[in-house]
Image (cartoon, rainbow, N blue to C red; front, side):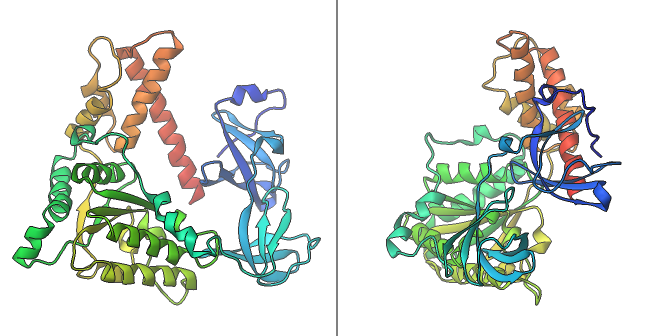
Length: 413
């Protein structure tokens, strides 16, 4: 629940708040759905939200919210293909997503048109009178995979990764064995390791560990965000996947890392969108066919909802292996705090044990936020090193922020 500010409260009081775009209001104005700039959505309830409407911009702070000029929200158009023109609305498609958006009727539209749509102004611009693709020419695909490749500026080592000793040992064993000993695996006659699932809550270091192992093996590293691969351009997600797998197959060693794979490879059913089914089918084909017997490409997929992944991906020869990243235990938290603070100037003995004990249930990313808050506390009073008091205050501030995020996620659900 978020309360509205009193009229005399100034926007400056909310300088540390988050801008949000109002997507909808319901229940006679007592419920509002908003989208923050990072793409997350949340739903708030209050006695009266009648002063705001869809398209308004608000600044949400610890003490409530305040309406701000729409110009505060930097608006970017979304590319859609029109599927149907309805009274006052458009049925549109972007990748595997189909939705309706308000439509004034000022611009004459027909099914199949490709448009740019502005969510605040509801302005529509026609790009073409037919579905178009961002990559109409084969030349465009040559550089496509490079957009998903991460080049490490300096080598990464396991000293950057705190805690999770058994997880690190297992992942290092499976992935590096496959990448670094391809000839030995062939000589033995064993089937190459094609896919590994990293399962566990967000913020537990799944992406970081995959990056470190790629760096240690001197392997190319491609990162694909689940929501990102669902292209805003009609029908291109499958071709993006093909381009990435093709580029990886030409490298001596490569890891293709899928973040949030459950968002694009969920269980198929009669109700699943056709584009989603095509994307899953394409991924299955690529895992079965791309250098299948060479073993130079390993696909690693991260998820916190493993039961929602299409069962076909879990069959032998695809994602055969699962490594679970649970929330860090006490010893892990202590080590993570130490590793995160290794490069940060501090003074005196910091209460690592106390902070580790007070953060049961926290992820590695949430523990890292304690150091960020601690540095802010130190800089605020002119210090150049983090003290014990700064560390404790950093914990308290990180705990407040963590609770706010959890409440926002709960409201969004």
